[in-house]
Image 1 (cartoon, rainbow, N blue to C red):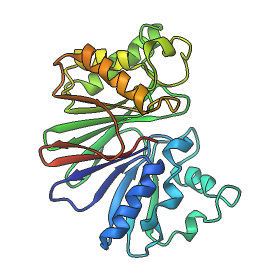
Image 2: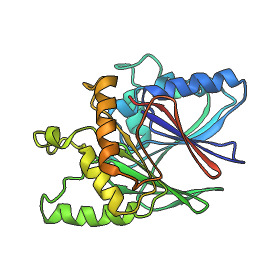
Image 3: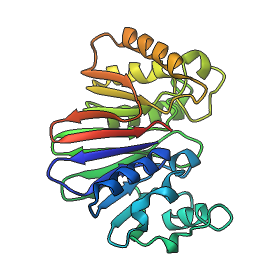
Image 4: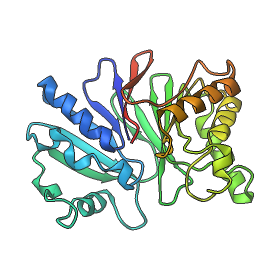
Length: 266
């Protein structure tokens, strides 16, 4: 998966995760004929969040400039992780063969301030260290949480996570959140690192999230199944949100001064 946020008046690319949609985004940028610079924030290094990385054509343009951020994976940092994914065992092009001006930074917990926005994260409940990113642009807040298991009412430790998560998303203008399962499916998949859409919708309603976009669909669900789920979601959510939908390839969500481009689901 890959999500791009466009900020009016800022030419710097702001990109989250590098799944197969990252390749499509690179092709679109290449076709624009302009030189690009940007910042790329990766939630965690699972393959579905990195598969497009080696195929992003602006990385092969010496005039382009990118900064890449990844939370620490234990003692292993961003550059080591990406270099491992692009080692000769897995891919014929290594990191040092990319021609763009690249820098990899291990994003330690805390807030980073940039010209038009700030970014911080909390830890998700997932199978590896995974970020839930919070992006603040002017008075707007976007939460990007593509892999997170809400694990409702599963014990004391989970209760603390719930409290922290609720505070983190409270009043967000847009929440993009993992909703891979139905509650029935989730009952047999506890601990897999993903959420049931029913739990996501309920918590988002309670925390007064304005717009909700559900992401990370079960790969076994075809378009007809997803359309059926979306209808169920709309029935449950009534008029609690300004907008509510499943993420779709090529989808655009607009906020004042901000445009969120959903490039591809997986």
